[in-house]
Length: 354
Image (cartoon, rainbow, N blue to C red):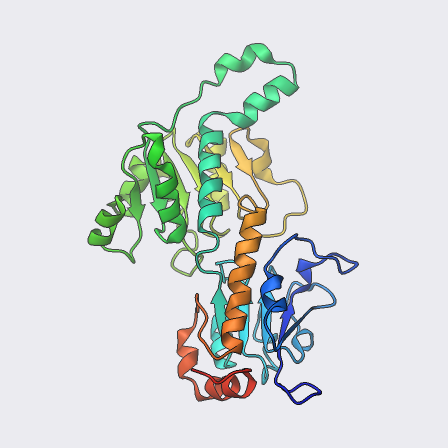
């Protein structure tokens, strides 16, 4: 869109949850220096955070960078000048993807930016679970030194990791664990073949086989209709009694009622849960009653490096679109075949498209 001087300006908006009540950034670095350095791009923040983005919040923006807010069909109801939604992360279950496509809006994610932080957090949780870190900490705080012998841990050495979803995070996890002396990782992923698995040094198996053989089951798949409640009562019953379940992916992939029952009855060794069906959690969580469960508020992998890298990736995606190039991590590539999107892109980009 033209500025007062007649030059084209590409306007980017950020959802309000990047900032506190007085407008100060909540995070030290989330990539905005890339936008600062790019001529022809302006950015602003929504003046308040809403769980669902309202159409009037988008206003004249050509791109919106979204942290936790949901993008609905209503959000896009006045999108004649909206070209892109950039999801600050890799999950996009909070975005109505068909509505984006129908509104001629491209959705892209921060592909690759979360791989190392989530993998590192997963390794940390594997160690904490197998060494009973939470309960050992509590024993000292409560002066129960003599109970320590009841909580003998196990090493990662000679244990087997099962990975559900072998994308970038799963691959980074395999690389990080190479020095721990574990068995060959098991992988369930219908989107890779045996040749690819062999190249990655993993064993491709069915979900049932993975559950029955793994000492750690770590979830790294997206939440879709196919993966909703992928781990339910039947699947938990196939796990070893001394196995741990780790979910850093999305709430809804695990049936929480079934997991609670399995933990209460001692049918698995423990769990680490970063994602829940109903977020945010504002009251004490039922899983908190278990010493063998570690919890985090969908933030176990949050680091300064993570936010920096995600921010740079998403901001670069906005820059790419502004100068007529396709961004990485596009979720709905079919939008690039839509005449309405192409007309909008040609009209709004600050450089020739293509």
